[in-house]
Image (cartoon, rainbow, N blue to C red; front, side, top):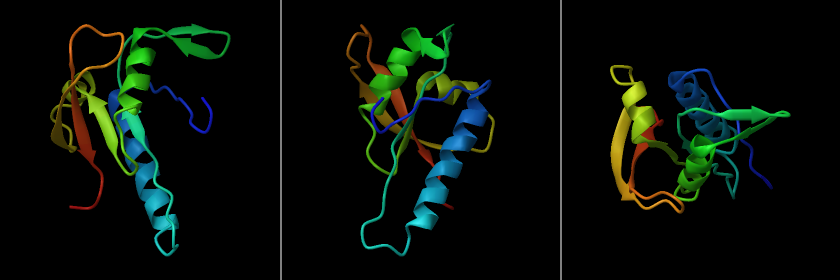
Length: 117
């Protein structure tokens, strides 16, 4: 994946917690630098196909397409992820419906508020 990486989690809330922790750690670490590094995080949920230490399937492809919509410092999730963590203490803002290459229907994307309120 070039300079990126893909991880999988057993639950949507663990994925969100990890994404928020990464954003906060990177922001804190580079707070005093002239050119801070900003990471992009895209999260999707679904069934995976695992083969020889690699992950495949529609859920993986959609997650990659979500990554293409993310700016540095953002965490974007699909509507599926937002629904899975409903009732938990996360802040979401509607990022609109987006066409994702290879998918017939537009995907609702939501930005995760990870900065302290």
